[in-house]
Image (tube, rainbow, N blue to C red; front, side, top):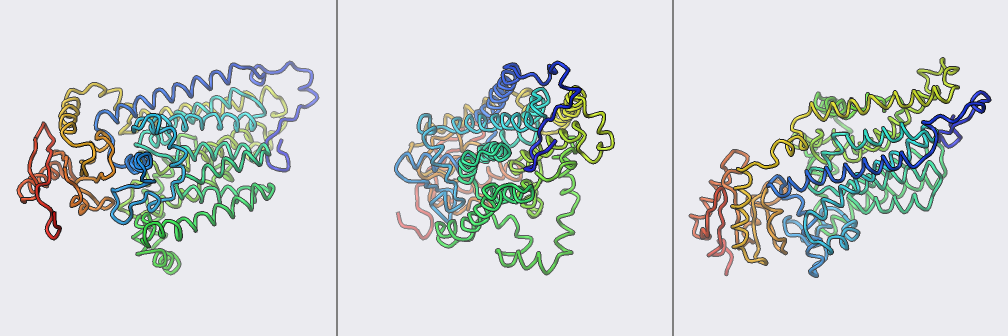
Length: 523
């Protein structure tokens, strides 16, 4: 049964009162202990894969977007970064105030691995929230709640977010899941503490918070769970995207708008295209890759979220951001990057609601069989049986999806060729002064000691190639590039242009030192 707030409750019939409690219903320490074990296995296993990627040149430059500002803050330059040409502040890219929450932990162990283990703990803790939400929805039945939490941990899109370098959105995901649970329990103070912590993350979190408020309004909850989070989320997002970040960036428009450049240049042009050319826009956003994206997210959950879709309101903003991204940014619509992060939790919340309503007979699909659902044991068994397909399908997705990072770790943990590359680049790194401005190849970026001035070599549409003019050293990889060896050709050009001198070539890598300033710049 559901109360007026929409929270699932169990009502015992007279027949139930004369029966002993089902072992599935009986509370014990067993299920929390099993949950803790599952979370621990997830944390240890996923961090092991992350650390392997970190140590084997399988992570790119992007983790430094978060780590370098932390390092600079510890050295007196608050949230400073060097890799973007339009701002020296990390807050000129996004208002990542969670930076200050991570800072004390990073100060204890200032290395990329610290951020990786923290985000893995955060992702694993999300399963605890899923368990609590499921236990309430299933009428305190802990077995189905445990099974759905395990399905959450085995869900490939979640694991891939966790394994795609450093992704602070995982902290906000768990904060929002616990905030949702506090909403259903009626804990307003804890709800708002968690919401505010989530808001300190990336700006798109604010859209999810606003949608959480819409959910509160639709489900007729108190204003503190409805109109207030809607207003706070919407206002915060507008201020961050259109006022605060551009002000910090010296007037530069919010950088992620470039992901929608197929609609026009800038906010006004994008809005005009959507309004004046709806057919053109619809033809793109209902394309085949968008349908594949939705299918890939839903089939491991047996499409159950569609049977209780109201919680998907919270998934709608990030889903729209992903499907509206242009062809150049089609990676926003796969399960290998970080972009499903804010979609995943609400798929599971919706699936829990669907399973609970099917098991207790309140869903329209089974309401005509309501008499069968009066038996508590029957409801318990059905809730377990309906969760089992999630476990089977999430595991099936694991073994049928390629590339699979966990599978790659299992198959290539000790690759001699990779070890030789690691040894080569580490040797060259020892020859670079620790405070020298450095342009570094993508895959070696997280291996060099962090410094105040660090640039990506050779640069791309995100990291301006012109920033190499600020570097004193270049560490490049001859086999990297959009076409194999393209970076090697650029290194040869630098070594011959009179501005750089080859210090050493070791294996695939080259180290260059500046011997003359770039044209137009005095020494």
